[in-house]
Image 1 (tube, one colour):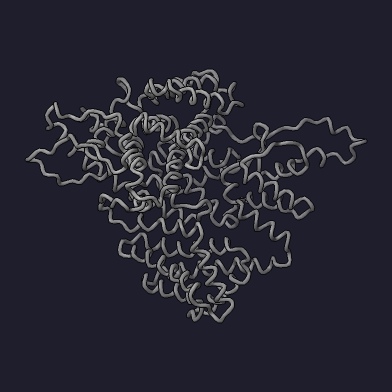
Image 2 (image 1 turned 45 degrees about the vertical axis):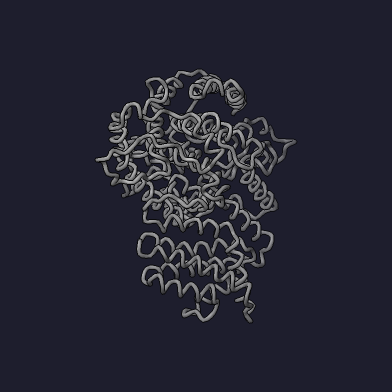
Length: 638
């Protein structure tokens, strides 16, 4: 590939400038279908795996074929319904992690060299790429820098915009990488020392990993204290020397934060898998807190040790450390669910909501090991809660069946209004317990029995006329295949959504706001045929619109929905959207993770509305995307 200017040596003499530029695009799904035949040997749903591969690669032919080959060669099984997660782990473990050593045949290194060929434009290219990473996309034109950046293969022109070609490139050539390369270019004399620092970091990572395999948590904590808190007298002098070099030549606190955070997680990854060792994680946090206190109280006579204490203190003020502390309620539980104390902060309830873990407990640049650990905890806690719920539902339904018909619960449309006015409000439980029926299984949710029954009935039973939410989504999706354009799709989507909105509330202002939002969504695609990517992008934007950021001026609209529709119908509306695409559930989870993060320090009894929403969303997601036996539930709904 080349730019016209590279092919024309003398623009005054050559006629070559009459050529036409050809934009190369990645594989689309229909062009990749032959690859699904090979994947069929590995999974019952090869199309889902192929779609996930295209999602990660942006259709880049080389990467699509490489991932398909890697997928077929993997020993691990692809669980049905978990195809996207399986592909993500494959990408992170076999391509992203230690990418230079795994880049065979060479591809990523070629892109790097195209970008870093050390001519006068390299800094401009890196800063331009940095701008794309920050903004998501920038206008595409034929300036030399933008053309050169496109030719590197790192970015692609799409609908008049330049954006990163795919998620793999975005993970590898991230903001941190750009910053490091710019540093090298602007201060080349320190390059050899920076390379030495990187090898020192790896030396410490390897050292801690090796220790974690043969030392008890108590011994490891003693080593950690000697190395990072005392800062002197470490048994292995070469390890201590490597740490001193890191301190001397890491000129950014953010780099040390990343380094120390990864050191912590090397230990945590080992401990969290063993229930006997989980207290060690809290002890590690206590050590770091002690280090921060020590920095303020006592100065070391050694300059490098003083700098170490300062860096440890700054780490305890960082986002990385804040996220690390969030992990404590998740790994310390034995899953004996209990009703929280009124003044207990929301952050202590995170263990109840595994669907928030991927966003609430993981920073953007987290390592593969870190993500793998969180996924394991998430799956274990999700399964434990699902088992508890599956045990309790039959008991709950027996009580409903034995209750006199006059006492059967009736839907309360204004329950949420009471919660807004009095966050500690609990509605009367009208499902009374029979005298000869002992409660041997506890309710695993923070909902009352009445609220839990209504939630199950709403999200599993018939939500509109004779249809469940899943039925409605399937009917809608079966129609979209014959929809003429994206504009027509948005019209149909509007009708699909407002069917779940109370007419009185909708006519007041909600319906008009929703209509205007959809009308102005992705308008550049209005005349295109609808596809899965457009559905996913539309659903994601709908979640942003409905579950607004607390710092957004329009945040009160979410309260307005809850207060007027009630929690059940509001969550039901969000569920209708999530069921339209298998890829958008994480976007919904992320929106609630933002809410959870914003209110994490608030006392439980002050934000009953949010806890009520989180609990209902948990039931909606588990019953529609989990492994709960829905068939038996449907038979018992009255």
